[in-house]
Amino acid sequence: MTDKQTLYTYTALTLAVIFWGFSFIATKIALENFPPFCLIFFRFAGASIFFIFLLMRTGIPTLTWKNLKPLLFIAIFQPGLYFSFETVGLQYSSATKVSLIIATIPIVVLFLSAIFLKERIKIINIAGIILSIFGVTLLVFGGRTPSGPGGELSGDLFVLGAVFSASIYMIMIRSLGKTFSPVQITAMQIIFGAILFFPAFLFTMPKIQWSTVTANAYSAVIALTIFSTIGAFLCYNYALTKIPATQAAVCLNAIPLITAGGAWLILGEQLTPIQFAGGAVVITAVYLANIPVSPHSRKDS
Image (cartoon, rainbow, N blue to C red):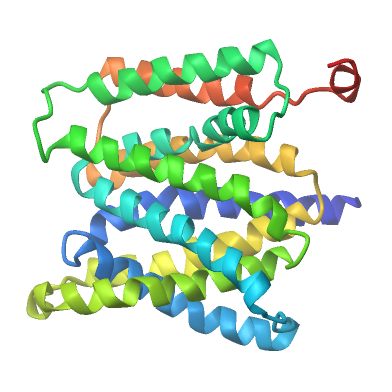
């Protein structure tokens, strides 16, 4: 790549990390006035409009029941279950803690790939998996006060549900890559997401007190739609066309750091010393778990 291309690539990657890092904070703000499923629907409905126009320009995929069925099934996990669990979890847990728990998705993907796809992993990757369990435990149970039913512990469990939903999706999505382009898969997911969340939106919409909705809440919904759902994907997708996925994925480890800094400045959130240590352990674990197996070691395995 030329110096100019390198600059564009890492600028795009940086923007994606920033947009996704602040998405947890924007969601917390929006949840103060909007029920979870209304918020999710607003986000996906707005993004769907954009991606419908994008597909019209780049090419609408040929859909048959044979290739549509797995796409619909995958959409149940991502965005369906993932955003349901994550958004509900954010009602009870801090944005910083949620982002750190979500950061363990690559570790769970590695674990599930080893079990179901029989992919070989190195001992250092296994160490990362074990270390991540310890780090998440510190995050969940290292708060200043114990969490009762409906409190932070419930939120953390919902977020863990989001982690497993996204991990299962990432395992299943590999086969779809042979049929659809990444842009087409993402566009169809977002469109299906809007359809999936529409019934829940109709059910919970009467709970919205429109007269009390703040400008901050509206701004958060708009930011989630434009920056986190549309902008972040386009930036990250552009970066993936220029550098290897493994190289780009390393940069995603900075997302919890962005969330932590933003949540401290905007929401006044703070981790306890134990949770801070747990966050450091999680980030280290994600790095260890994703050290790639060299071609030589794969051949010898």
